[in-house]
Length: 327
Image (cartoon, rainbow, N blue to C red; front, side):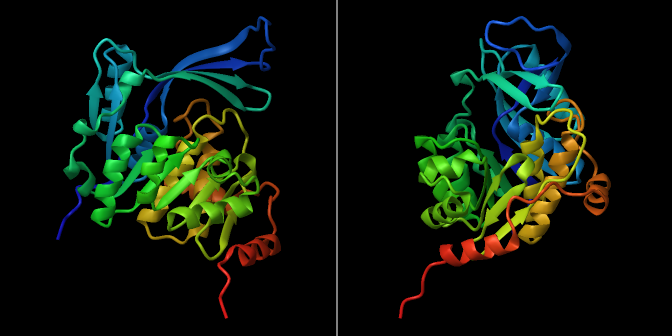
């Protein structure tokens, strides 16, 4: 029997973030003084893997960097975090970068980013053993030509696939049939199905692709999931919001952590909302990655924000969404 070397393999983005703190978001044509500026590391999958490693999982990250100084920053941080990595280095190319504008009055952020097309992780760079030596595959919506191959290898080996998806694109059509647990933005199910009501869009998306469960993160409103039979919902936790950057990455890390520990969906959503909330209390995508005891303490002691859905609403929506029996 195969003995996995890693608990989770992640294939996807890393980024160098220039975080700009502003008293208020600038109007078009205005001039605004910064309250502070820092260069910090982020990126969806890289941040997810660093969180999982901190929580005791064995992690393996695959991504692409340029040949600039940022590439060495990423290597150094991954080594420091004890994340095993295989990085494709692309010559004469800048690593992915983001400028993140933080409205300090609310903690909300606006991201301006650039990823050179040459930073694509090629299918030829991928090794099947990287996939089969892990217990779970975590991917994002970038480079679907490569991640669809990895997901197909995972499916053939009985390895669950969790996907972090922000926006629907034609390239994802070849990936989605191999995904077990898409964890999406609020917009993704709407874009993919044309249905604006999440209580209808999630069941339609799950039915179209046969996912084991589909989850949407909905910001301060928490997270909503559908498993083909019932809805699962968790309101967000009340925290002191400094910067929402990376909250989604921590939610995805916690979701994968819960899948690996065979938790039920309610436990996963509660844990993921707590981990995401704590990350909002500090500046930067990775600044608020908390240890497990602190996440669990928030779950025990903190109050929740107002629930978007009542249990009765969820039960009625589930009854409408379930396939009707014939006869």
